Image (cartoon, rainbow, N blue to C red):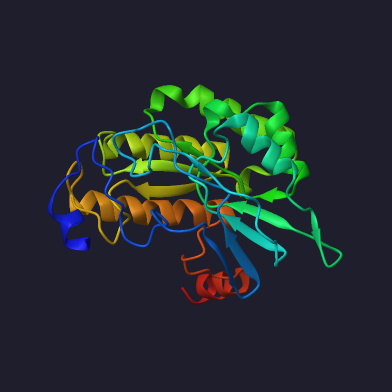
Amino acid sequence: MKAVIQDRLFPEWERTPIPNTTWGKPQYVKVKGDRQRIELSRGCPHNCDYCFAPTEVTLFEIPEIKRNYVEILDMNILYPKKEMLEKIKKLPEELDGKKIKYDLICGLDYKLLNEDIVKLLKDKNFVNPKIAWDETIKVQYQIKDTIKLLTDVGYKPENIGVFMLVNHEISYEECIRKLDILKVWNVRVCDCCYDGGYRNAVPEYWTQEQIKKFRKKCRKHNQLINFKVDPEIDVISKDQKKIEEVEG
């Protein structure tokens, strides 16, 4: 399967699952260490040509929660909105007297978000919210408004992540411009390679050099957001500087 992914582009109507996904398998529920991973739903109806998610949406019951940190794998947790909001409301909030944290692995569909939904996510202790900015730079105002929705309910900008589509029709140069905007907003980037992740990435729309360079830039971007300085630069203390100035 890996060789097939690397040999050709999948046409938009073909949704052959990539390796290590949950397609065709029972609901994913797994405990590893102090974390638990679950599915509440599977699939996304949007049928985007760069996405391998099945368009048929499957809903699951809430499994037994066994850890205080739960990662949710849903591809579009807000669809169908009515059913999924009711499911989110029923998620347990405590285990053994301690709060349960929920962390979404995939990006929220910003087009489905509103003030009531982000408040619900905050109240249910969803952490590190992520949104998907798969479109061009022209939707920057909608993305900015979505980030404001999240910060207005108490999320810190540096804890918000934004997925960006890499190695597809949106050019490397445009993604760099999007990265600059995210820096101004002080939010992290979750770079996302559309054709099966970086291990399987083939330079189809971008060059291999651009793919590699952009991933490196994303890493540096997140370091600057997290540390507010470049942690990989050698630091000279004030005392060292004085000594060098005297000896010089």
